[in-house]
Length: 171
Image (cartoon, rainbow, N blue to C red; front, side):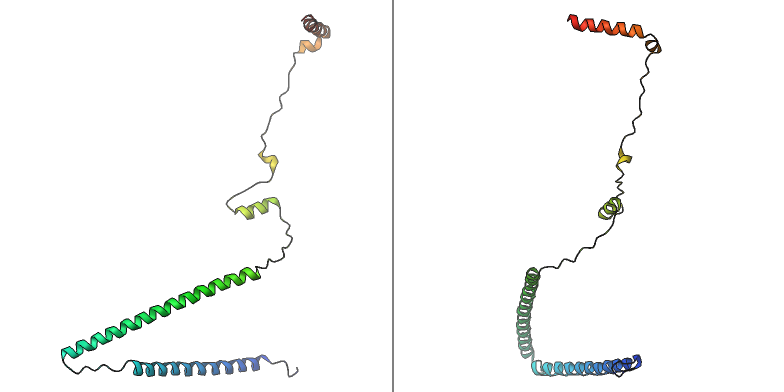
């Protein structure tokens, strides 16, 4: 084996080292976000001062309510901006797809009978037969039975035909 190809055990060892380093980074990031949150809370939300008479506490509550209202308005404005940005992103994605277009894959030739194709298109519930002969009506052949005496006496048949001929000629 050459040095360029890694053995599987070495590859697994390197992968485990990378995962350990990534786990340490995640733990550090969690600690930093917790510290940043505590610092922000200490700066913007000092501990309430509960000392004083009722009027002072009422005034303090009014200030807290005003601050909460202000924060809610800011949150609402920020949410509206985020929704607007998300909508713009979706519109731009649609424009990109329209400009680039959807690539149609080359179709493969498939040998399929007409029955199988209709079954695939219509689903398994519909059974379609392309055997057109099966849909035709069965018709019984009728044989004409001529009287046997007409066949036997040919002279009489000739005389009947002559009488008919005379009828047409006279009219």
